[in-house]
Length: 245
Image (cartoon, rainbow, N blue to C red; front, top):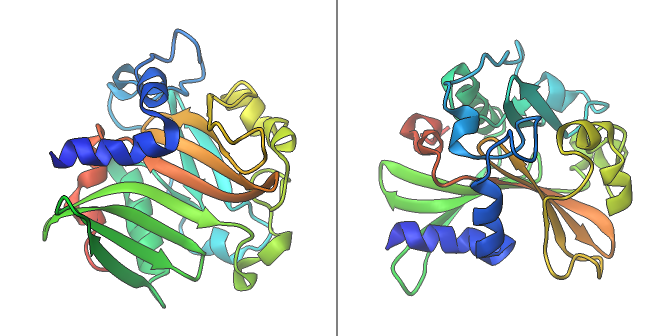
């Protein structure tokens, strides 16, 4: 019951058929850069990810992009404020570092819906980001998404800090698609768009190896980036990632 409900949270955003259609493909069919989050794309085990020696360096560097998309072999994953969002091997420490380094002012809240599912949100105001997920029990947290609002807070760069590449907050969708990373890794087109996208307040999606990377627009301007964790990837549920920072 809980598993179905968690999936429903993703379906409300991306559309049930679209999510399954994207995530079920293999990298060799349509996206040779390993963009698709199918099982075959990460079946060979974790890749080596070099973690920052000083995990706050990218956050403190106001000229560093908020978001980078990294590739290693057939694996595609985002790095947010210098922290790799990756569920396997040493790279999984990226989430631990993210939560530990930005715990000042962190707020946690829980709500229980009519079905008895406990939704837990961790807010990190230093970065304008939050984790949303489901708390199944005291030892098991299932992450659903990581959202970072744009522009970044002033102490970490504000409106002048690039979001990705040379793009800044307020970029238009066509500018995003012209970014070199998007052209090289995602073939320069959204894999999925919400119905309200053309009206300027929707969301465009790209697949990564372990989830979906989304760009949210408001009034045709880039307003947030969201990473949706693939619920089939068990590494995201490692309790060591979600201990109290």
